[in-house]
Image (cartoon, rainbow, N blue to C red; front, top):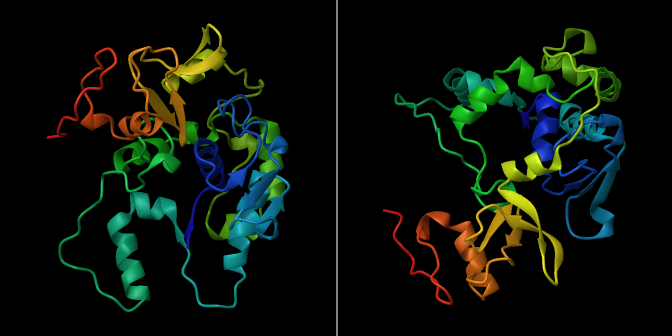
Length: 266
């Protein structure tokens, strides 16, 4: 079981919710603030009987990991941060724990290991190791967007046994960044970061469109935003989505009424 710092875990959930559902406040730009307003439900399998409900995101974190922590079964719980920052030593300890041995040659996997639209972003993949090292080594990033009230609520919500066991302590008095003001979302700036823009289209109203006016569409957080404002966009929806999922195969722009042929990524 891989355990993650509850503060950075909430940021990750804001980027990609997977099967969880909670208010993300203005397209997630301020998420997880305010933490008190994140009632969360999780659909583990299709069907109402497979949905759990949690008061807030830190409650979900605590209740999820506590089931493993309190399990009478044999289990191995490893901190994500140890795998990231002490990769080789941590893997060696895991091997020894389960009766295995390390190979002489150890290769770090630097590329993103999560692929597909479900992992967010226009690139359709998660963060690579270099991005993760930069992100999770920053105390400022850890406390980003949290107010003192957010942190006080999270401290009250999480199971102190888990926080102490995995050394995930935090408090409003030890914040790396002083943030007492409420988050003020800038919707246009947030959309631009995702490669999107709001634009009025005659006969269609205000729509979310790709920043690239010549593209067929873009996939953001697993959702396809078709470029309805581009008269040269490919008329076939499945073809347009395929091109958005495989941007390296289609570097050429459309000619009017005719899609460019696939070009090898090599």
